[in-house]
Length: 376
Ligand code: BGC
Image (cartoon, rainbow, N blue to C red; front, side, top):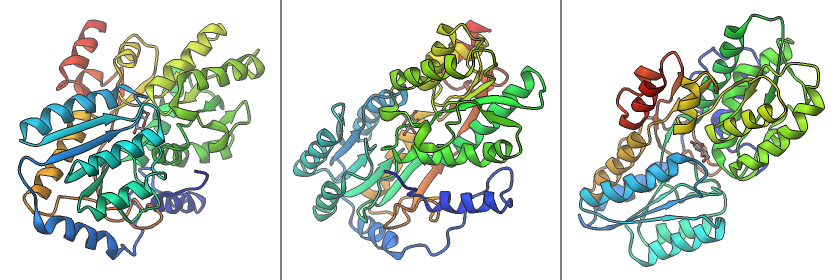
């Protein structure tokens, strides 16, 4: 995927150029909502289905802890809601995911929840799903280039990026005010539709500072294409930084690194450590256990709390509404254009976490609050 699938992103980019984007970014009004979105939803909502129906959940590779948490929650919570969960991981990639979705359809799944490996490669299977009368929910990652997706449930990805951009600036300033800071940029995997949205959110904050010289990208690798990390694999970003750090920062300091998630943040820090460089300010996402430990210990600077329990809960609430023949709740009908339609979305609010607010941020999370208590 080489171009921008998101209406909101295109609009945000234009707004940045015009220097009119407010600091919080706002929600882009795309206008022109697509009536096919509503038609699909009405059809899905009109009839309902059996209380013990099979619900398919197709998850991508285990590229971060959140997917594993989601697997366990979907299995347990769909079951306790009375449904028959069929939850699968596509560890081998796109074709495995295509086969899994096809077999969920054959097994009569009434709703198929998809966290895509590559959101643009499932068109045939999603059409099969709709032809069989199932409702399709895109989970966390948008499904692209298809009319056959009814809903999207996710944390607001653009906002995630914005929070990361702001945290990077704030973290570097806290370490000591300078006229300019040396930074490097990391993006996620280009086949994941979220990666570009995280990037655009972050760049809405960082780009003006690069332009005015406050931020200098030492390697010169400033574009999304140059910054991507295929497959969200830590070894890929580590390899990139193992070249960049000695090559560019022999005598200069590397002040900060925009990292889109925790797994990649830790790989960047490993690379800096092996080059015997002081730890830069590094952002992250997902509140992975190792990263929360690191944040409390003063290592990684920030992460994002996107509580998987809420995301799964909201998805199951949609499934329950569909079962009862009701129209599921959405709170955004203009931001997520998948190039065929604007997908009605239920967007949750991500929270930035640093050492300063970790205690409050994880107060309701039994695992993470223990880690914070142990480290403080
Ligand atoms: C998710 C992130 C996750 C990344 C890698 C993205 O689609 O939104 O939470 O870090 O995938 O697994």
